[in-house]
Image (cartoon, rainbow, N blue to C red; front, side):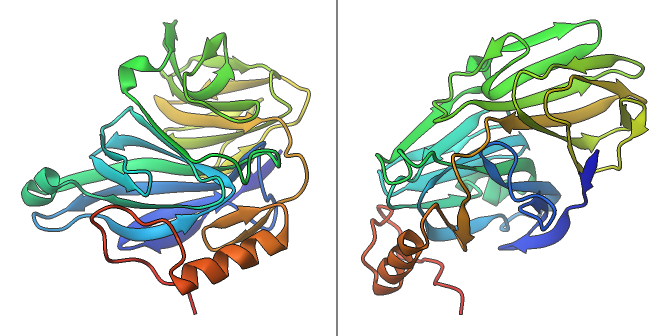
Length: 284
């Protein structure tokens, strides 16, 4: 059982833990990037403000437990994202977006806690159409039984299928287990990993280190036992159709695609977010 300890990072003032990518594991199914936005209190007049920045070759998925975010992108999307909603953006060959604390929450002060993941697009789609969709919390399928609640954020598993338009076989589920309950995790997807957000748990009798990513053995079911009330997410899916390169906000199967995107962003030859002038420059 491979366990990945996340590294601490800071994104425009928001503290995060990032287990993917790591030296020990570059991806789990299509998931190439995993940020746990740690629970953070913002005083009135302060909040997240991630300025205009570019992406290629991936889909971003933002999922909040607390707080609100405003998503704006170069397709003209302008959406408030609430806890339990899915904000899904597919970059294709070029997209830019902004994520910030909405004006109302900015004025009153807010608390932020959530996850953002990136899923590499299959080669056939990495230069394909750009897309944004918002999926309210009530549209996501869920089940509750014997002290275990499962919500399918994206993809499919446990007899549930999310409406999020994933591009390859995907598993992304939120799990709530009451103390002393056990969930059998089937081998429905070849690659799977578990991240415990809160609580104490064990996997097949082995304790799980808090806030670490545990890679499950392929082809085998596993038993997740809650030693206290436990909140976790399960990610995975089919193996990628070849290795991916990642440089800054770009993901691609071919290095030349990243070089082309880099040159375009630096030159200002990129779709822009309506009404936005600020942007994050290429890191020097």
